[in-house]
Length: 159
Image: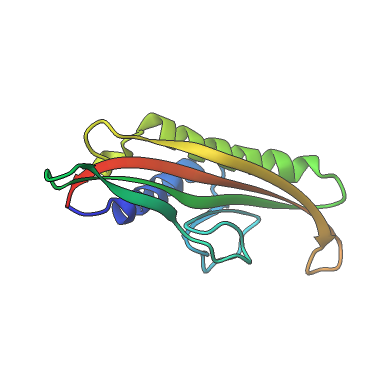
């Protein structure tokens, strides 16, 4: 078995899709950017809509000669919600609902469906919230809230 990055990313996309569908059926989840535009969106594998930074991390031998490696990496994700009007609270509340669903999914299965081995686990890390105001396509006011977060993973595997 090699790196768990692919399996962990697949688990996040599938389980975030289920979790988000339960709290906001109009929101979309994407592996990178989704093809559909929606007022609520969660993206796995990207730090924000205009940034292409992906997974970062390290790999190192656990015990020399045994062929076992430890990997420690972060999968960037973000949740974003847009709401019409000049009040920020509706978009912030909607983005927090999306983020909470993702955080709950990770907390329910810290081994990400078996992607992480030997009792290694994942957790939510580096949470950042940005609030923005702009103009909607129809010319009206629009408020957006972006919550960036990492799913930090630690794993052991045989090289």
